[in-house]
Length: 110
Length: 115
Image 1 (cartoon, each protein chain N blue to C red):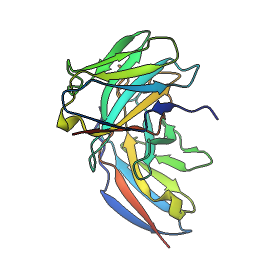
Image 2: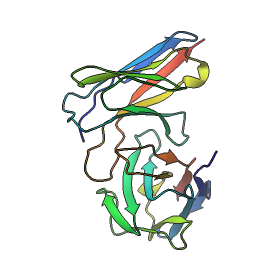
Image 3: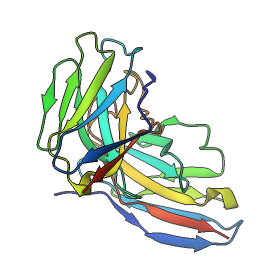
Image 4: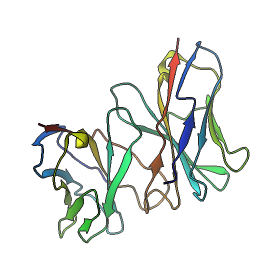
């Protein structure tokens, strides 16, 4: 897997934007960047993924730098329910494995 | 919205016993996965399954583990002789396309406690 590096923890005030960074400097040209989250001990939940262009859906926005070596997940208006561990994953282009790292534990503060 | 369902939600077993964890993936999905998460640790990949055979497996997935899709709807994980260290939450997932090109849908997990 292209190795990803994320800060272990972050805080965000409720209602503010949460910006979660991820470094993936060894990413290759055809590998996607995925973001998932895990709320407490629930099953991981898909958030968003992208290849080169910035992406937005109803949950979040994904900003990928032009050199693709890093990305930022943006939760535009964080709520208490967004408190979770957020995983940035770059699965290898070949094969069918999908590995989770240690992620960023985001705490949304009232 | 379609979802992945897992049973049982919690199973307690004695060391050395066989355990079968069951999953019903989303009906039109083609790729299936098992993960585990030991309490306080990260989510670990165990195995992926496609076209009725294992496509990838991790070092954790040794001879004590097996997977099966017996009837076209269920996807099961069997642990032959459980050890204390098998105590974990086990997550099943499914996807329509390969994991590196699309979304994985996860179930809510089966908690296994080995005494």
